[in-house]
Length: 96
Image (tube, rainbow, N blue to C red; front, side):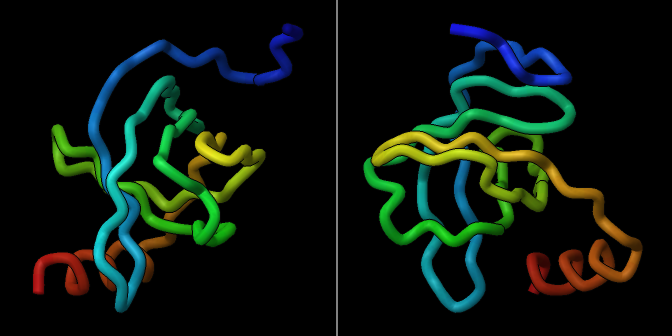
């Protein structure tokens, strides 16, 4: 398969959760990761929105994600840049 990513990813196997306002977190597995995006595996991607927050189980990092591609169980996401206002809002939202 032809690699089209601008930034190569490292194969990993890490737990994570998709955080959606007003809904319970959705567990997933991070299968590959870079500073710019990730490959995620789910039981089902049927109700996954086009943008969401991803919280890694280790390290407490939360990243805003945009879906680049999607299958029934896998999703490729790019990490979005956070503005300072968004960082402050998330800090209040997730620490409350």
